[in-house]
Amino acid sequence: MTQSELIKIFPAENSVDNRVLLLCPEQFPRLAGLSVQECRIFLLVTAGTLTLRVGSGITRIKAGCFIDMLVWEPVEFVDMSNDLQAWCLLPNYIFTNEALNGLKPADSESFKDRHSIPVLALDENETATLAVPLEMMLKVMHTPNHCFRTEMCHTHFRSFMLEAGNIMHHKHRITPEGEGVEDRQDTILRSFLKLVWRYYKSEHNVDFYAGKLCLSSKHLSRVVRDKLGKTPYAVIRDELLQQASLLLKDTKMQVQDISTELHFSEMAAFCKFFKKHTGLSPTAFRANCEKNGGDI
Image (cartoon, rainbow, N blue to C red):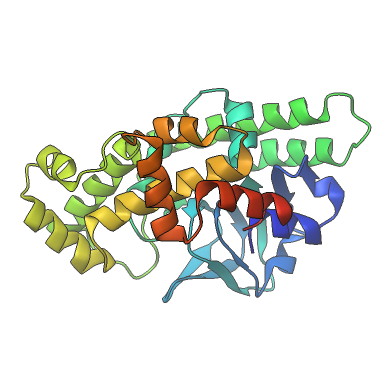
């Protein structure tokens, strides 16, 4: 399910302008058995255990863990312990940009470092710190007659992101249960993914990333294939497609402007690229989204 589809199955007071969905611990169990894709997901587990499936991999998330994912492939909520207490926040591109207004919280890119689900371990105080702005945001959401409901939600989301950024800045990430110590290939992959997240809009050529890592393109390709099962170009391509899709779905930007934003040489090249990998032209993709209420 996409964010838009999830919004439709939860009460109206859990969303704002169809741009953000927030689920409290009491509502979280309704996600059991569902899969989510094509959106950003924040999960804060305060008690119990949550089991997720991403592709063929299973990850168990324990209490005191925070997850920030930009997901393209489905993430399925497989199992939840009886004592699970967790928050789920799904903002779209427009809401995030409006709330942050160009601000990029410290170390927010660290969650793009690896291909596996990124999990950040928190102590009790850090968990409580992240829960507070979510509680305040939900309280405002449940006040539909508040004159500044949207603006207040922006404020609490911004606070949440700043607190998360501060925690990330001072902590090291942990990996999902069962993963070993990072080896040389993991280090290369982590560095490559971090570079892609930083430069994918302007740099589409694998040679650029290999050069940054002081590796040959052949060696980089071998590492990425071994670890992810796809080429470095496919990683860059997927980032471009995800961003292009979000801009087409969630903004009124002209196709020409999106092409420029993603540093294609000309609009025709962007349209050819997008249609090749999605089966639809950018214009047809946007029209299809509008026809289906924002869903593909």
